[in-house]
Image (cartoon, rainbow, N blue to C red; front, side, top):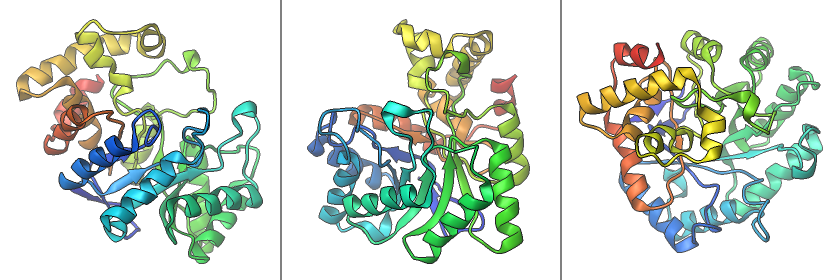
Length: 317
């Protein structure tokens, strides 16, 4: 699998990142280990998790991180795997209230380190932003964790490009650790943001694409396959939630075009949709969330497929 260098860091990330929101819960630990084994054997080197994952399930809090920690130890792969986790997520019962104080971030970070059973986190995402908190204050907090050796680099998940740019301008002017990457909601499918209940999500839109193309800041998009929207649409398997999130005129056009490229490249719709992301003019390593080895294999096919800039423009038109 192709490796992608994140500028201004020592991180070289595999083209596809393995998500783990269901690791150890709805996907058993044994099946999770099998998925991680196959992903690593294919050249994958980055696992993405979060402090909050599975907290909405009885007994699920921390299971994803602990499962990753046990796999790393069992396989002896800590120094060959980039571990990324997220913290500072609002409490599930009060999503409108940000958690961005030094104490709240430190609590999540320390607990994640304990669950993962590692000494330092390679890439630590702030899972949500707190627009009422000055970016300067956040940069100061995160720079402290870098200097303390608890994290190597940090990024923003669901941060607007305006806040990312402001944070990095301050970090650059003061010699502090800034945002190394962004993790937005991002896929070939354009989401209907008004229909998504969680208003704290930030999508990779046209302005975001322009920002990343100009700045070269890496993107690690989640929901990179849009719940399998285009594949399920081709197979007449869409559910009501899929319609609400993604049915619009833009995706009507992209549905036709992704099928055209799938025929041209003799690839699956999934592979074309992921290759749209991996073929951008900036570092882009989408997160996948396969539930079995067959889904993993289909997703990894995108790692060997590169679209031309004309193909990318064709899909976006």
